[in-house]
Length: 270
Ligand code: FE2
Image (cartoon, rainbow, N blue to C red; front, top):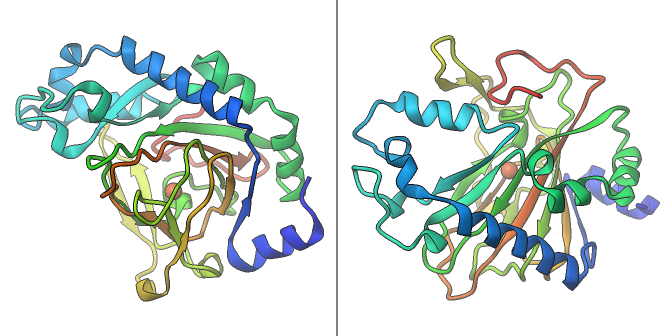
């Protein structure tokens, strides 16, 4: 699937853009599946989860139990202290995750696409396993920032093996919050790990405090249907959507089962 030139670009930059990976029909189908899920979503039933007044254990349980389920995560500004939505739910949902590939036929079918299998083989994952899927909305004016991070912080293996497949379901531009990455930054160390604590909460552990040259970020605007491959150590982020154009994307994260997957990773594999 990948040419030698694409493989060496990926190894050099830590990312690779592949245009026209998804057809317009596939983008439409996946967006339709997400719309149907949001239609069924009943936020009233989850006030305790979204309330900042309640103990955080509700939030943690909802998040930590999402690995094999379809769960809804809201924009920070979209809920009041009681966990009630301040916006229509169609604008309030930041993302759906993290087990879409297990719980919904549209995502499941994409996960079984042989092109993905070929890419994983090209990237030398010996036992690729899709461990996390996220449909990210980034709604006009309300879609928030994703801060600079490495995916291996959240899906750690020893050695690091996680690969992100970020698929643009709509045109991603500088205005609506496309990906930005530090080209070549995947050759540096992992800075943090996000781990499950004993009490059923989560926290970050610091591994390395080498600062990131944040003035060297490269914006990665891509057309609808593009696939962006992301090395697990590549620092990347995306801005809030300050435009009136939506920026939906689908992210799949693969690890290599030949590498050790620690029990204190936040996501329990099913
Ligand atoms: Fe990421």
